Length: 160
Image (tube, rainbow, N blue to C red; front, side, top):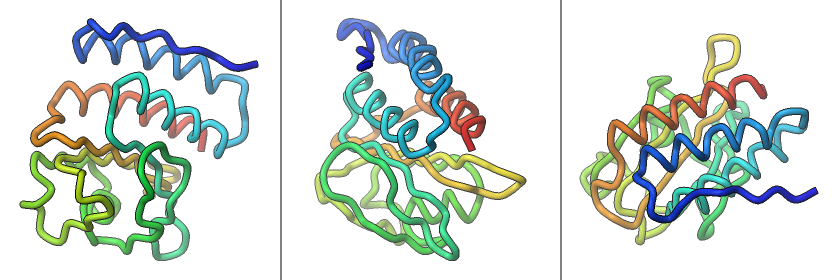
């Protein structure tokens, strides 16, 4: 059965997250397939928050490999420590970038991407995957995004 997320277009960013995250939790409850859950989470974030690009990269051997995403075509593989995603993986922490053109070693998968937030999900003390969210606007992410997306990543960790 298809689910429909309800997020008000007139709500503040915080109100959107407060509405969206419980809906995502309900969406993934009872579904054991990681790919299906990540695909739905990416779609919910893309359309619920009106992000430019949302996707997951999964740690496979010594690379991040593109997983479920919503948006333009993306980079397929990223090495540890390379770009924003590889840096988040290497440091095992959230990386928030106001202007990707000013981030050393930024990998430009899309020239339309202007700012980015990347968050890791941990399993057994290691990064298992990362969530990458891009905006086509400069300085589009802040502490509110970080707070709620880190809360969402705890939900993702429960799926691993």
